[in-house]
Image (tube, rainbow, N blue to C red):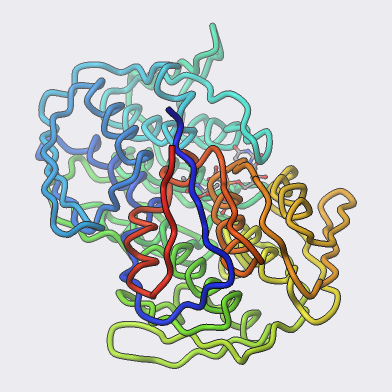
Length: 424
Ligand code: EPU
């Protein structure tokens, strides 16, 4: 039986939330384990189905692992990587999670060849991996697309090269960095992604013995080394989870202490926008306090690569702006189809019109409960947020999307005085 979530309306947040490790950092870090035969220990890994999928993929390649539960929202994972025996990422796993493509760079780098299923379509956009492949080709790999698979080989090993990404790609940058760390010579990546998750990966790789500099800027330089060693690494806090709970404080006219990271550094543009929308932030021990001013003001938001406003906080922000005192404009510049939550929010009484990648949100006085359906990970949380402020109790279907990227939602909300229920 597929689970649903029931959200009681008109609730007010007051409490604290422990922010987990970032999904989008944990996934490339797990793939990076493939680069060394000495194993790896990752701490602060969020218990999410996407992490389980990546572990299943690694297991399929010959990696063994143990999971240790450090708290209800963080695991440590010990990976044994000496018996890497397979070089295929099969369709059955890749179709569940596009980030599976992150094994391409490490496999090619360590084994000189790999076979990775092409990911299929996705709810938020076409999401090709052509730039990952162009980067690998620049490093000397031969790429063939056959039978729905990418067949990549570099029998003589990869060699350092200069490559400019025509557009900023997060996992593309991560994949090519992982391919380049064991390449012969120096690689210079231009127009690289600057996301904190890319920086976290590069920091971990450097602890393993890689020689990467410039991560966090547009130009990343990688001097190839001959091998990498074991390391222990703690996953960076999830800025998107932190931003999502900040909006929970805003939409419920409440207050939440976000614990576990330097969120001012991780969410610069988001915090600026939220201040304009009426939220206030103050530094506390090990985190940030978010407080509503009691009013939601209209704002204009353009999603952009880091350090710009993150696309992964667009749907949640839109839910809050549905109740703003005026008109807001949202431009989604990363994904061509990331407004699927609009139709669901309108079922709850929102007044939104969409033209291409621009949405205009005209604030209404009230949202009302309605049965709604989650369409993707971030959209599913936007519906929970709208439901917390709505009149009546909302039931959200297809919440398996939520479990891919948000852990312990019920428990975390309980810590700030909010009740939601999972129902069959
Ligand atoms: N793109 C290409 N060709 C490529 C790669 C990307 O055209 O080879 C395009 C995409 O279609 C998109 C843009 O470039 O229009 C940016 O995509 P990017 O490659 O940066 O996205 P991604 O690496 O596949 C990661 C996150 C996403 C997040 C985006 C943007 C992971 C595992 N996923 O995806 O997270 O939205 O960066 O910040 O890191 C989520 O967590 O909900 C999520 C979707």
